Length: 375
Image 1 (cartoon, helix red, strand yellow):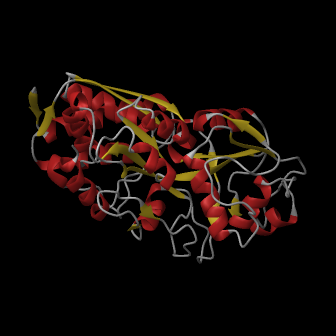
Image 2: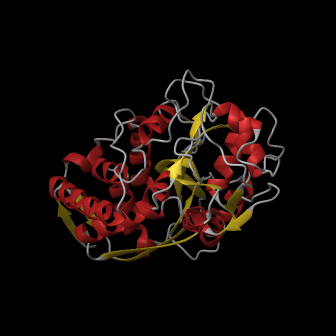
């Protein structure tokens, strides 16, 4: 077994420098790290970081966490040069499928495993099963590109009707009522949704189902069910379409909104003021998350219908899907090293500067306790 260590202070300095370079290259502002839901201190933020094992770690799935993985794999590779992390997107559905086919070591999914997916995972997790480890927290921005509108406010029923083809004009009375004083154009709304099975879609539709007062007639799902609109693959694809097409609307993670310079709608939740799409406001929502999974599975319950002041409701958690038992012996040590790094304080704070939300200490501590038990 190969062992190397790098001090957390040294790694944190490297991560900070990397994220500064990425932010400059992106040419857009970033939210400051939230003051609530702080990243864990954990074993990796004050102690040496062990680089155990070697070889290539293959992952696939969620595009929501793609920007986070890009930061992590460069910083981790610098600390642990004998381990190479390769991550392909394709959406949460594709990632879980590849994991259950034994093609990747871990999958990223913005929705926890379904019972049938857990059953399928037992074919590749010898003596065990797939589990959900929350690793990347974020929020879904309702991004828009509307002539003359800089500060748009929407609520769940209005978003549901727009994406289901029932509100078709930007100056519709429902939109106007939420935006008094705004000059809304009498133009057709061009909506974009994910064409691939996506955990981002699952979380958006969970919000619409929970807070839409019956206006979203479909169950939450990774597969888009709304009527009308146009599809695009991945968060990058939706972002590109909204940026290019005038009078359009879509939904992507905040990091993609920031990278592409897209405006995000504030959400009227019933709180005293509409809630802006910021990492700090999402952290307020995550502070109330509870664990729904059992045993080593740490799937979370999220309150999409929150009306708390300053709580942004359209949030998501990306889980790393791994085997609790039956991981491939050749990559197990490297996998545990990588996951230990990604849940560490420095790693969570690094992605916090790119539109993500450092996981609350209570959640991170549970993940840190599970990782050493993987076998």
